[in-house]
Image (cartoon, rainbow, N blue to C red; front, side, top):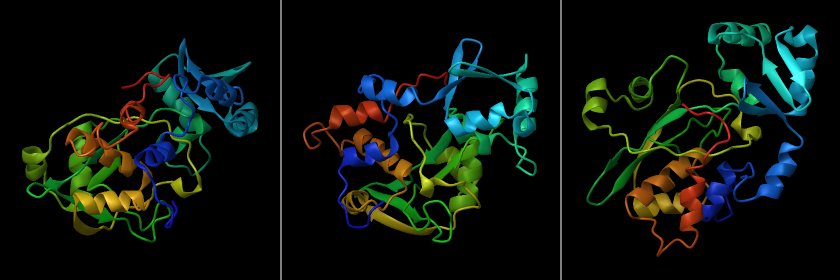
Length: 265
């Protein structure tokens, strides 16, 4: 994100919720969808595939014979989740990690993560880490206190405990005693070059920033994009962003709690 541009709260949402919404922009959504293939199981759409991915799946030398492509839809073979998982792994390139995570963006399926914003009251200050400048993804940008993807077989709380220990040195006892579930944000992100594969753990520099300082860093585009909308949600819940001071309040609220066309967990 630019170091000179000033970002409004809606600009921050636009950066992350970037795939056209069928409710807000039906014509743009239909136009975008016309270039994609729908990944399905039974009658359920699971994700959208780019032409290059479909072309690779059409080539059985690359992808095996685990796929049926019919018009604008593509289906993975397998009568059970275990069979479909095995076929997905067979489709992965040699040497790829034995996990579905690298394939999620290729197949456009919904992914899940957990974020925690640690803060102290009176005056409200937020624990803000800085990402390792050497990271290939959003290096040097500001981050949420704790954040990480939820892997298959892991629960939300167990993921939070794991990430809290790795990223903030918070022990299980502290997390169990202080962490509270307060909701979820959802968005449809079209990945760009700076969002390459997540590798390694964060090595954070930590700052305690006041509300106005966090607002300023948001406006400067200093935060990793999805962390920015987690903070917008935090500010809405704490009455810092209100209909009186944010002209795009309703759109922001609806777009960071987007309803997907796909089944969700």
